[in-house]
Image (cartoon, rainbow, N blue to C red):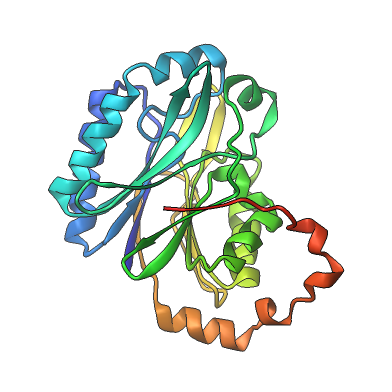
Length: 270
């Protein structure tokens, strides 16, 4: 599978303009041979962390999501995008995966919320492992802070995830998450991680950029710390197979010593 990761520049713009940008990038990614385009956290609305901003952003978001699916179908590319998902009286920080026909494949609600701002604005999702089959690979979904919990990434690995998609809104001074934790998670759990961040700054801070695809063999392809970028990388089954054979962490585990860490993990497969 060829993967395109869009490190989008932060801009104050309405939903229609965001969709125009998304359509431009989707077409560009497909011309580069990509089968899947991954966008940053809350990409359809921009990242917001106050209840009032999130409530405003959630208005009309279903229409934006439908149009995003049409963009995927027109470009002929699978697409992962983020949005504030309203459900009853609460809002979730959600990512949705659609296939190259624009059909819904999977959705995941961010399970680990960072800081008081996110916890005031969003409800936490209650599914740990969400997966889908795409392009012959088992694809898993997380959002930003989720990947900083090694138990959750390892749970994905144990369920057979080959490629973990992690849209993010990582701000400074937390560059070490992208630079150190993400490659370590990919290596120790023998899977690919596509970590896709915003670039630029807004009232919340300066985003780190550093979008990257980390491989199970320790390889990393990275975008710079600033500026918009479309990072293209291949996810290869032979690399997965050889890395898992060379570094058999999963096979060498002794779960009887630490089974309490993963007991009761919930699993959803689309």
